[in-house]
Image 1 (cartoon, helix red, strand yellow):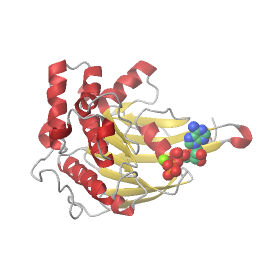
Image 2: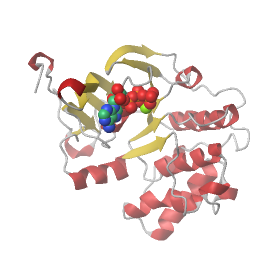
Image 3: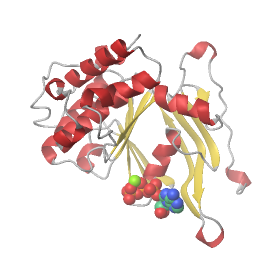
Image 4: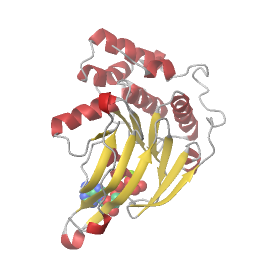
Length: 275
Ligand SMILES: Nc1ncnc2c1ncn2[C@@H]1O[C@H](COP(=O)(O)OP(=O)(O)OP(=O)(O)O)[C@@H](O)[C@H]1O
Ligand SMILES: [Mg+2]
């Protein structure tokens, strides 16, 4: 342990009965070091962050400032060297491997710059996979996956493999997959980083729909136009929070967004999914 003066402990425990009070996602003194001795790097260095339910948060900052590391810590893909992560009112940074895997599957939806779809599976098979892994009945999972693909404007591409889809279509499949288990939070790392401006508009349109439906979303982005669609923008410098700015509320749809799928297709009904 180092820097005893920076240690903090969360003052609030998880509420009884599973109800989420307070922030959906919370970081307390969150830090992650890589390497040791002369090569030691604090990629994330004492970040305190409360993300309330329904907020769209953009994380920005120069390359290497710790954005991806922070997102991975928040989603349980990596473990902190110091500090705490709370998800849905529950402290999760100390969970065992199995519990952490279960948490990632059920409570977090990840979207990556490079999509990370399974090449040998069709779009609908990619989307339903996390539902099947979470124990959903095959017919239920397929119905849910098909409904989400419809919502992201890809019903006609359900049986296509990723290689047969454009980058924007692949990312929409990845977003549908992230939503299939109705996660508490969607975490997206440069979700438009590989996309042209038309496909970026489509993804932002979907995020605006998610926001209208009350989905909590954290997205890492270099793109100011993408960050400008958020409720709040935090910037990192050398692993620490340098800025925390609230933007004006209200859903903002980028101009010309979502031209190839219906405007009247709120994802809200599909977010409340029960078996
Ligand atoms: N596995 C690792 N081993 C060692 N150092 C690492 C590792 N992953 C990240 N780092 C270092 O941690 C710091 C933060 O990296 P991170 O990938 O979080 O940055 P980033 O803000 O996402 O950058 P970019 O915008 O380029 O994606 C960098 O200095 C990086 O070199
Ligand atoms: Mg990164």
